[in-house]
Image (cartoon, rainbow, N blue to C red; front, side):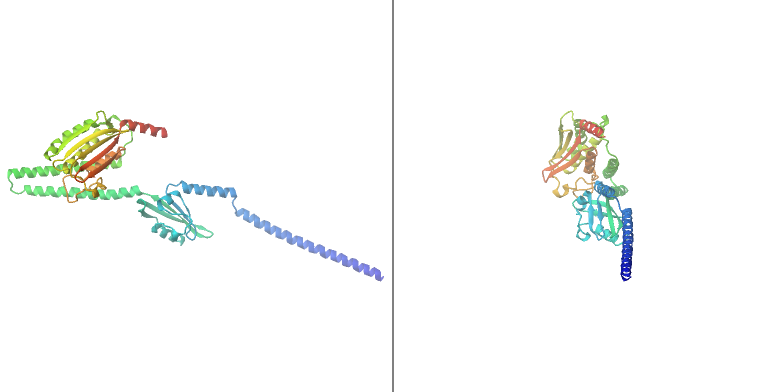
Length: 406
């Protein structure tokens, strides 16, 4: 009986232990399954918010390509002011290097201030900026902020408008110069008219009338040159060779000498010229005549009595060079750099004659036709002005090259 009871007790204990072990196993399994389900859900949530590696790589590559393909400077700042990226245009024109913080960058102060405002939560307005070095450039600057998990970053874009800014400045200077140049002869004409109201002898009256006529002619010449310059400002030659754009250089030199011989003799100057026959320049004959008239008149006016003036032309590779040289007093070295500017005078005290547009017009005509103008002077040894213009043959060759490229 006792043995049976003991056996029964042991059996029940064994059964109970088995049941307890089984229950613990079930609970462990349930806990494991719950943990597995939770982990799976976390993984699924992360995968739903993640981007495929290939897609992310494509987006980064497209961003970098867009950044570096832009011809305008682009800068990308991370939160905290670190310059993360700068394209080639930004490095070349602004001299910035990625990997440096805003305070360490050699960036223009206006950009640094705008970036600081953007990172601080403000929205900077677009602004204009001039960068003086290494060459003067003018930009319109836009700063746009973006948000990240680490804070605010920003993108800086710069659009260069140096040509437009220079044009606006030149227009203002030109308008001021025109006002001055018209005011001076008008004042002289007013004085001459008032003089004519006085009792004058016949000779005095005739001399005053001739002076007034000279002032009117000077104003007419100034207006004509301004109209020509304005036309060259807003139009450009199309590079097409046409019969009305071919000038016989030797014939134009002969005609210029004929037109100015009397004025040269009256000024005590010797005027002559030489040229190889058959030279053609790709420019309308009236414009080449205008170029020569301005150069010869300038030499007659300033060379000084006893000097010689010589007009010459020679052929170059695909071009013709026209030279007007005198043996006069020359131009001081400090004035040569600005001598082709509109209304610039080497002698500021001199108010006439002359419009102050002659050499500017020569340079403008030459460059509008694909050529160039230059001046060399030595004090007390004279001035030499060279104008190089393309030939019709080189103009045709250039047109064929552009046609093949297109």
